[in-house]
Length: 303
Image (cartoon, rainbow, N blue to C red; front, side):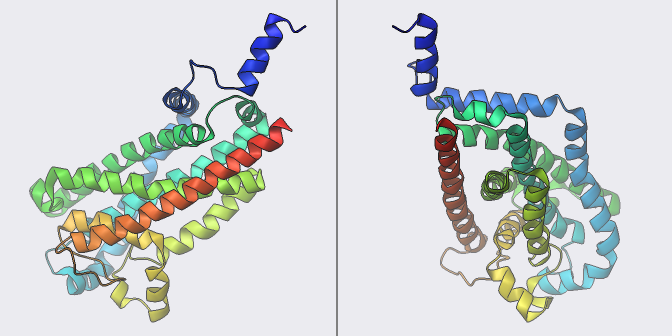
């Protein structure tokens, strides 16, 4: 005959209790990862300063030499700061998503991952809660970038906020939403690499091998049409291009998509609709793959 303590243990490991649900599982994981981040002040400070450094350095280093190319592509009224802010928004989303896999590896190495796997928590909720903790940091970083971008533009020559984000406050919110939508697929990829390698160094190498080449083989820093033809081909298949173009369309208030020809929706929607569709499909596919791998890891842990 089992004791009450054994019965409680069997229930907690083998089945979900009535008190647990998908939302509560998401909340538990979200809170755990947020607390883990907050308790490391170095990570918080560096992650918030990181976008500031990138925006200032890129505008100061490339601003003077790229002005002609930007004017030729989008018109003389578009500054390089305005052109670059959407790219930095996507870049910080990419970097924040990268750290998600590294955090998972740390959990694996200290044994916390195995403890989570033997709980009755919904595996999709485990992934979603962890991803939402990254989303909070991404939102803070994007807001910093948007404010700093306007400050740099104002220092250079002044101007009203509506001249900075052509689509206004709603467009600024949309840029934040695009950054979040973009981050989900790379967060999933980062976690997949962590589950495959179960090693911090290997995970960092794997995600960086994809992150930085794709960033420069996109519309991030220069208009696609002035880049070599083979780069234009890669950019067409590059998810980063679609994220940047969606954010840039909201920033400039016009259709800026150059890698695919869409004319069915009109104006900025000719950029937003295909870009959001591509990112949404990537989110679903890689998110499902990450949850599947969590389930496989859970089965292995139980055995």
